[in-house]
Image (spheres, rainbow, N blue to C red):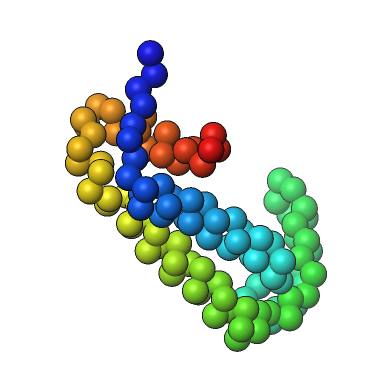
Amino acid sequence: MATTYDFPSDLLAGQEELHQVRAELSALLKRLPWSVEPLDGFSDDNGWRKIERPASPGWTADEQAAVEKLRRREHELAVFVSTHRFWAEVAAEDRVDARMKAKHAHDTS
């Protein structure tokens, strides 16, 4: 029988926000130019596969600030979730299982 855990609401809320922040950061990075600084485009076919990049206008100050804000929040949440007091209550041999269930708790609700 699978073990169930009574996760504290603040842990689950932190984990859910972490998922949301990571999704938002990923979407933002996909929209932004490939280079933070303005750079010329290039093409390189000397490796095992051809690599091409168009010229990059770079990121604006607002875009850089948005990425930094999301990265900072992602770090805060990752630390909060991974060091939550709940993990001390879980037997060492069960922590990986519990952690995986906490990560996916929002999938079933």
